[in-house]
Image 1 (cartoon, helix red, strand yellow):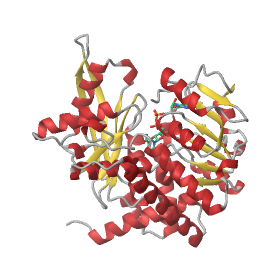
Image 2 (tube, rainbow, N blue to C red; image 1 turned 45 degrees about the horizontal axis):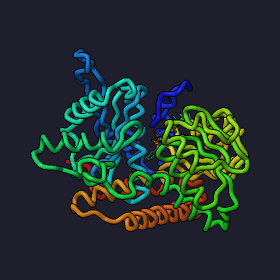
Image 3 (cartoon, rainbow, N blue to C red; image 1 turned 180 degrees about the vertical axis):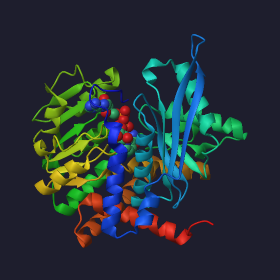
Length: 423
Ligand code: NAD
């Protein structure tokens, strides 16, 4: 689970980045200014301030948000994060990215996101449960299986999703599994959901390599972030024979040019929570990690990690974004000039929302698919989206991020056009 770091908070300009990306792509696509303006605004922003009774009897106030960016293509979908640095702007940016991500994958969803300003490490399990349930109650007027379906994000997990499902269900008077995804398996969670983002990222990378005639077993990778996304990506890459030469997390980073022992490192992380203290690999700094020579760099920790200040030092040939918004527009421009290819977040890390969509479908059907079926359908969706993005990139001569935005914006804009403006 991510914890606040000692680095500058990356969330500060997530919204600026998201808006710059939207406006650049919208103009390149020739979208009308009023449509770009329409898409630059979240349709609904809910801020809630709510009390939670702490274990010692005191009452503490918390602030939370649920942002629904766009409903043109379907109910809104997006995670809920618990983090002390959550801001409304950050949540709006993340909701906007969800709209594009769902459109790139052609899922019948719009984008949403939620967050509570809290450091969950300071709470007991009972306090965390009360906070989750009260927050769910506060946002229950705007969520629902046909309206807005939350899921996990930073510092929220299947147990938190189970509390959300239960709270919503108690108020509705009927168990409603499709109100939230990322649930425990026993409550209608989907097989394959946990590893889906890392797995989907690796499916994209595998297919990209196949298209470009790259033998992955002869490549090296560096991964920043060793949590749900980075850890799973490391595991699947290792299984494909990729040499993972560098890994970093909140506690530091490790380098081994012969390739780190990923299964042992994952075991160490599961036992200690972080990679610190692992016997193997040379300790390096986060800055050194991002500048390691490698074929593939996978930022899978936080926003704004690759910036105008460090993009010049990156020595990877290909960047595959596991995190949301890890690359600033300045860094993107530098990578383009230097011939470094970026496979963008709204494509590369969409495996999580894709299997969340599968979970929602299973919840509505009250039927569980087996894991092979989930993974096979995930591969199909990821590969198809990559092909579509590559086709746009080739046809319009665009980098993949712009191509993914073009694809997403076209789909959302077309849905808006067909539905018309009410009334
Ligand atoms: P996580 O909490 O499981 O892991 C985060 C990792 O980043 C941890 O290893 C943590 O130690 C590391 N980290 C935190 N702060 C750091 C810092 N300052 N420097 C270096 N490393 C740091 O979270 P996750 O679910 O793996 O999510 C990671 C990123 O991927 C986030 O941007 C998230 O929004 C995005 N994402 C996650 C999913 C998903 O399904 N989990 C889906 C799409 C996108």
